[in-house]
Image (cartoon, rainbow over all chains, first blue to last red):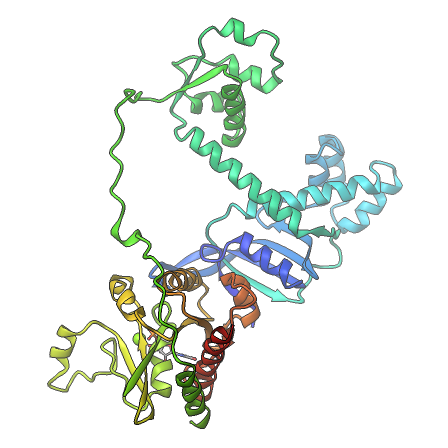
Length: 298
Length: 178
Ligand SMILES: Nc1nc2c(ncn2[C@@H]2O[C@H](COP(=O)(O)OP(=O)(O)O)[C@@H](O)[C@H]2O)c(=O)[nH]1
Ligand SMILES: [Mg+2]
């Protein structure tokens, strides 16, 4: 029987750890969760596996393959996204080479000197890792792990140590959380810190940072700026974080909380209190030996 | 006469009642189940006792072992500390086929460990279930240190239960000798 569960209860990170520690070979599949109307043992909604969402393969505890099934995982698209093929090249290849496998296509592209073998390996590696980082942020979805199952031999395999991926993914999740804490409301707006001219002197801003800076105005919400600049939430939060750290930009909450007025802190829950471990009188050895004898004779 | 006790804990439906029932020489007193509705006493019992299992193994005239199953629901966890008082050791039952309960099992384990520094073992129960996680995977899932015993278990089988109890006793013995 395959290992089964829901990443709500046993996270992707925990699964990766398990695969790494037990040096597993096989395929992890994560599904869309379909409510069954029933409750599981923890009284949460029980989910049945629906459409496949992602597949990840491992060989002796190393990551060899990952795909998001609702996305185009083809080599052409991956190379195009990574800037190794132009849009035009990608279009032509999709037309002409639609019926050959990624592996065969890779050979041809290398032969035609479009890309090097190293390019392909690097890009596939990045692509695979990015999928894993994304899977590590998922919080719901039935999964199963089928021992020894492997992807089709047509795909281009990679070989990635899981430890580094787990650490980097964890780092990204922490960053994401920090960013979410820093900006917990996209309807907040921005203003310059005091003395902006002084502060901007000698500071080198990236193009995207400049773009954001040009919209700093208490009348614009972060959400609006994000939309105008076609940035993702993470992107704009990252930029605002560094602008704020540099002391250039302040976040203005929609309804500014008056300073000095603190929200009441909830009283510590009684259930949370940790009892002290109490030293206990050790039992007599004779008692334990008698119990062992008794059980053995049962 | 001396009485000693062991506590069987774990999430709801992990197999605590089954475990105690398999080895106890008396019918397990359980208010969660087991008292048939048509006995006149049933309603009274249900109204006056907290759901808890209770089993007994008599060694001889001088020594009796009691097995207490903790009430599964957290709303009874005020009872846990009382149960933990003076226990010889405890067993954490885990339903190996229900990964959604692993986190809860670990949290119960930690709670009991905080009550008393007594020896304990973890029972990977329902190993006969087709969807059971194997003990090695469960160890990783529960993040158990290598020195903690994680024992495959089928609570319905007396031999399996006996083995878990024996392993706990060996652990107790080992800790005494240290
Ligand atoms: N297949 C299987 N079922 C078990 C096992 N142990 C307990 N069960 C079943 O699991 C359910 C819950 O067990 P129970 O002892 O009432 O759990 P408790 O809530 O922890 O007391 C019952 O239907 C038991 O028959 C086992 O080892 N194997
Ligand atoms: Mg019970």
